[in-house]
Amino acid sequence: MTRLTGRGAGAQAVYRDWAQAVEQRWAGHYGTEAMAALRAAAEAMTAESGAAAALRSGIEPYPDGWRAQVPAPQSLPHFPVVSARGGFPDGH
Image (tube, rainbow, N blue to C red; front, side):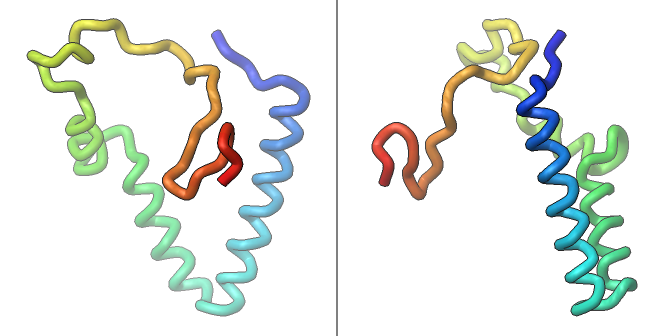
């Protein structure tokens, strides 16, 4: 079982406030109908059934590949993410 630390829970609260402010700003700019359509599309992509679930099934490892031979992780890895733009550890 994994849980957020106090620091993580604080970061989650900051993120939720930020996301809500962005959504309200966009609703003011693009209109509430456009935001409702965007939210419906985003929620459909995370659905547990239907086309979104079928699409996510495509991320299963190839059955004959080595990734299919190891158990699926039960938690997120504990190391930093390095994006294509750089970042930790090289700082670029």
